[in-house]
Length: 600
Image (cartoon, rainbow, N blue to C red; front, side, top):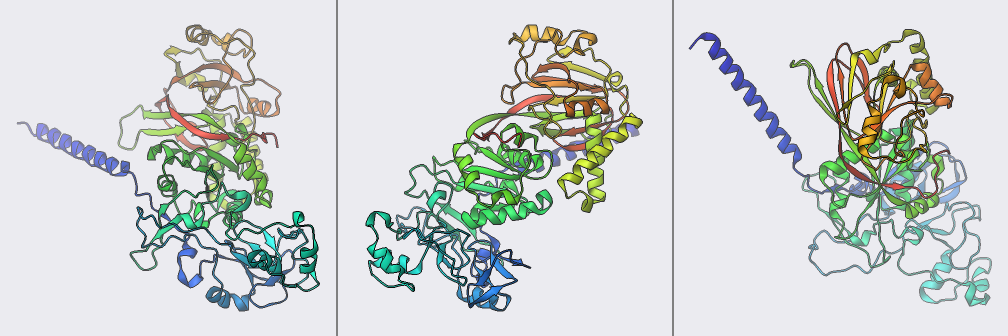
């Protein structure tokens, strides 16, 4: 055989071996991970007695050491789980002598099939440093106002009580508290006196909390390895139990994510609150496999659209059925999906001074469906350096001026992270890059380099510098470019015929075209065009309409020459000649807020 034939055979064998290795690697990654959720690191460390300490440089209100009492502290530490405050000098004593609220109470030696049942979770009382305007849940009198370490608060149900009131309801005694308050209780109308339950019922958070008497941890097999959640049982009460799993990245929102995690650790089981910078979504979602049959968790993702997309992709890859519905506590900038679902444009930890309002909104939220789209990128040249891409889109996919601004901002964020930590500063970055393109016109005549086929029909494009595929109504931090459509619903055939109309008609958003009302769960996307960066600014201000090109469920875009900025849900890159394909991938379960805060 000729020498070149052996070389070709060798190259073919090498390619086949490479393909086989890639295929085996994909098979390994497709295996479902063991549903082992790590318990909170500090809770698993015996040396910390369950506490997770946060250093406070200056208390914003009088605080008293929970170990020694004494005068008010200026600085010290507070446990994120139980709220115990201690001075620096007493920290070692607190770690040794004062246990934190437990994550799990079922002994690790109990088998999953064991009938052994723990009666319930006792109150975890923490002395002093009660919230302002606290009221005793027994006598209805004020608590924590003595100007010293006094009175009690349960770290689970958040009830506050005078010590003598707690003793009174526990054993029926008539002990006397300083100031004669016990006499006031005994002489009061019995209808005004409330009974403190012996076991904690978790108060107004009961349907969201995973009680520790329903949780079992496995023993770590190695030193310094955290314990793992091995079993979760359903509590007897409440009758409708929908545990809440909180997922957040502590670095999100310029550090706001860390404060949000702290707020939820204080009212939920700390094992329910997971930091995505430590525990990836696939591991965190092991909760959904640990829960008893018939119980579906609700997810609260605290972060931006990127974090939400990360979690949605993990749910899809794990094949969770039924998929847990997801709500959003928006942090950072953008948050277009959060706006559409009614959770607002952006929040901060200050909005969680009381989590009651958020948990109430979660309880009343309705389940909605969100389309997910597969965006495939196949380079025109089959080079080793030109790799195909497959991404999932939930919000929007764009080429041209819109993606150019996102690409420039992403470069600035990577090179100057200290200057992109504020929501207002980020908006200034976007404004600056959008203004710069008014003169540079990097994407000018983009339409001449594109071939667009929508639902099998080629489109005649007007003069464009950008093309946007919309899955949701909000785009570019709250702009609603597609608008509402009063046009009658038409059949698929007539709609496709309209989509193939000439450029002069396509450029008129409301002259001849008829579109269905926009929806993020109808299996269709919207395709719109952008004339320029100036047109983008006009859309943001509501001074100009979008170029509505069509609606459909399948899209092919061929970039014939040159490079163009591209973004999928905020992930930008520079792309050379290729073919983009957009096809329906499936739907995700999301929660829509009953109290719409999208304009807040």
